[in-house]
Image (cartoon, rainbow, N blue to C red; front, top):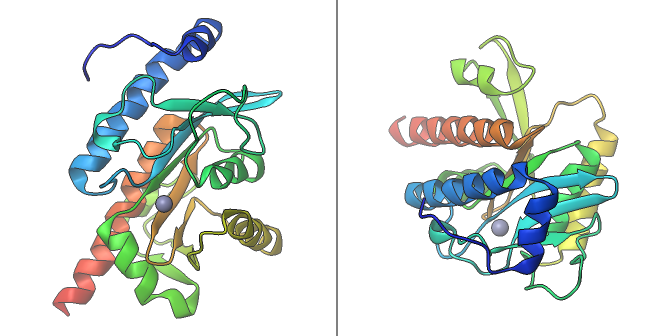
Length: 225
Ligand SMILES: [Zn+2]
């Protein structure tokens, strides 16, 4: 990752206030380059965030329309729990910022990652009538928090794609409300991509790698049968 300094006074002063955040921003830039290289974040798609504070909620999220393969230190904005820019004189935040806020508020996420991978896009369409995918028997399931054996079966929900992000947020939260005991590490949006999260950035990265790996296994298995 190329060394850079902030030109944004806001980000500079926020990192002064939360010194660990500087390293997290560099890590998110690395994640962007990694996901872009893997084909998970092409064409400025996808978005990433990390919780700066919970009281009140402050979230660092990628600014809208940035090339995730080459994020600069300044390609981030700060929003509140409703996705509003705080302060308001910043670039636009990612269009799907509300979905990040939702995972932070309702899943206690410390970091949220979103990808537009080929397998997530294809399989979310293939299984859309079932509104989710059962994944079972894989050793890699143990990479998900709370799973200790390959003899586990997880449900990855699928929601319909829409440009009405507040409506999608309500649908996702409604699913969590109706399934309070169901573990949920992430979800798919039909012909769009995947959201996943973790209690911190490392866990969110691990969950994304595991879920993407599992989807690729399912997809490749279907294509060779
Ligand atoms: Zn997206």
